[in-house]
Length: 229
Image (cartoon, rainbow, N blue to C red):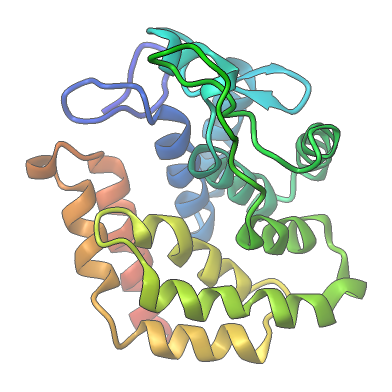
């Protein structure tokens, strides 16, 4: 489901997670070798979601939750960062990281959209640091990656059934391609023993008011993984 801006929405048309879904689809397209389509999504993200250098919003239209950059959370940003990293867009990655640094690496979501009062924002996550190192090509930080990739093992067992797979599986697959570590390899083996794929399909199914495009792309990711075995 796409809106008039070409961004992904839920089956019911809700656009509150458009940044998350569009970034996720962009990353999955890149991981499955559909580079041209991934770059088209990338341009839409930069054109419609980036409101100033390194500052993003969930959607270009809607209420406070949708349009105010101060409601832009870590789960939204992390999918965009992953897409930028996989596609090698170092300029956009650096612009985002600089904006984060100005906030002491806290995310933008410091506004309670209901009370319109300040709230404590999300802190930059370990997975985002992994993707920054890989996306920026910081090979010299490989020893740090070995430690950071331990986060994948934690995610395998602590994932949330309704959106956990969307928040770590594409990152893990990227880690196996760019600067793979023994920890990432182990996490992938462990991940093959859990029901992440079924959870991803359920989360993005039409019956769950999900995003059909992401549903199909997770299927393609799984097929490519099986073909490589």
